[in-house]
Image 1 (spheres, rainbow, N blue to C red):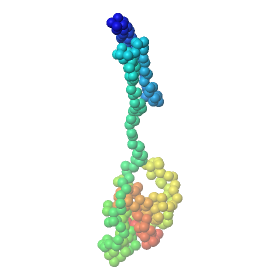
Image 2 (spheres, one colour):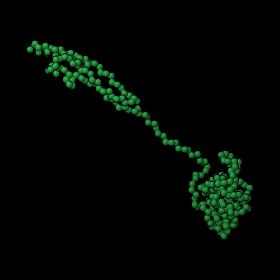
Image 3 (cartoon, one colour):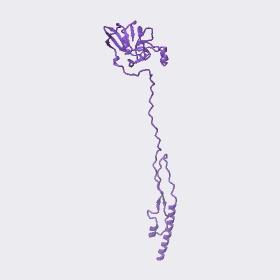
Image 4 (cartoon, one colour):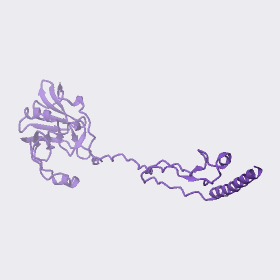
Length: 266
């Protein structure tokens, strides 16, 4: 009996040493290289854990010795190290600077032209007192104050607001109305084209014509009393010597005077 137990213990110790040597070899073996997953690759399913034999089953005769050194129901197997799959990240794109749409540039305004503004009601047509020496039917142009008077007689006159010549283009004197035209055509004189080569050489009458709805020519000069398609310029020094009126005012004056009427410019 003693001999039998001795042999069994020797056999168990021999198997135990063999198992420990094999376990040490497994522990010292380098771990398998982890699989690397890149951001631009589709995510792959993680393989199931691989189970490898921890120790081979030896013929231990069963019983208590096999229970001590055997695998048992949950012994003898180990999982291969599993590496957790990293989440996939899309590469960050650099943020591009946002630019506001560039605003369209307005053409530069002529420095000699007045800025557009509302019509000043003080230049509206009205009946006023007149104490001058000119007789009825005479046109009096008050250049400094930018008013035109049509003398009515009996101490009254119809007053209109006007635009006059810019500095260097004002004048004074006595003229007569030599012609009258409705919706006149316009041909800029050569001296004006020298200053403004961008002007058209000729423009037929119409709403866009700078002479406006009516024109009354003064003697043999190039000066006129005429309408305007820029009513905001009334009350300013704006012209090249002509007397400028609103279209509704020049139409009213046109119907009240005749060719040959006296025009006094002061």
